[in-house]
Amino acid sequence: MRMLFISVGKAHESYIKEGLSDFTQRINKYYKVEWQIIPPPKNAANMAALDLKKAEAESILGVIQKEDFLVLLDERGKQLSSPQLADFLQKRANDSTKQIVFLIGGAFGVNSNIVERANLSWSLSDLVFPHMLVRLILAEQIYRACTILRNEKYHHQ
Image: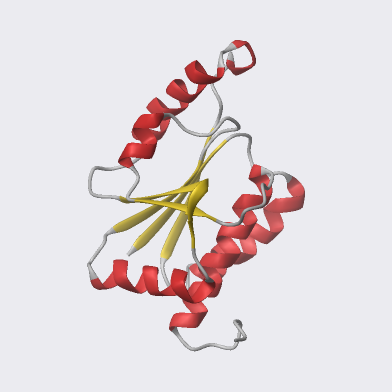
């Protein structure tokens, strides 16, 4: 199974880059993982939020394949504990899912067609985090779930 992490926005900030690199390498020991950053449209500052979300949706849908399992990170989504996330990954592997896509939308969220396309809407917390930090939390939590599945020492219960 492969994982694709998609984030709409700027390239990784330097304060996030090192952590993302570390956790991405760790995850690669379990699953092949790749990051794809979708830059905002060139005229994003002059666009209405709805138009911006539509433009971002076109870019996102250009990357996602029909058979991909799409997990949308959304503050209104379902919250999972780390063991529940591990169970989710195991179920996807057992179902022979070829690729899971984890999507971090733009500053205004995602267009309704992306919400409808999502197989799962997942909330990391009731708190709201900056998108750059969400990238790091996502990578760490996926790594944590991988170690739970292998009964490794990283996660303490």
